[in-house]
Length: 156
Ligand code: SF4
Ligand code: SF4
Image (cartoon, rainbow, N blue to C red; front, side):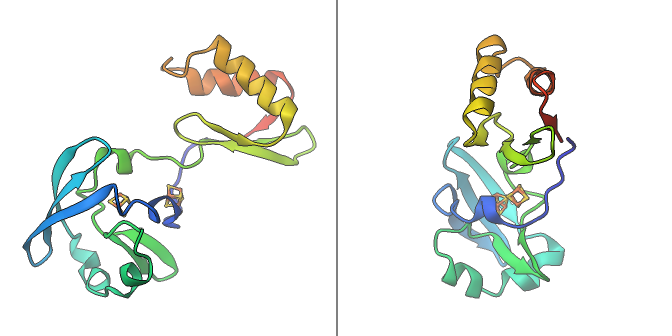
């Protein structure tokens, strides 16, 4: 599955404690820290998002959201797309959607290869795959998909 971000903003809604602004150093420039990795970075608001960034009603209403998140024409967008930390740029909320042979959706897998599903049979198949293939295997995503398909699941 080729991941395409829908810019729904869900993954950034509770990252206000993790992407922290330390100091404003210019009208649209900030010294920041990515707390989970302890990485400092400088963020400049994307030129085409400065107007929406200047409206602070969204962060005021959502105090746990990342300070750089803003609504924009029906989307919820990152306003530092160019300067956002690597873990933001490479984050994928869904890499596989799993359905039974009839097409009934049973669950999904996130970019860190975590299964989100209640179905006990699917969970057992996934755990079997995890035991056989370490998630650090560079080909793990494809191999997990093959395991699911070998058990009759439809994976997109
Ligand atoms: S990565 Fe997923 S949750 Fe985050 S904004 Fe994109 S579609 Fe939404
Ligand atoms: S920097 Fe951008 S992508 Fe990262 S959490 Fe904040 S709004 Fe989301």
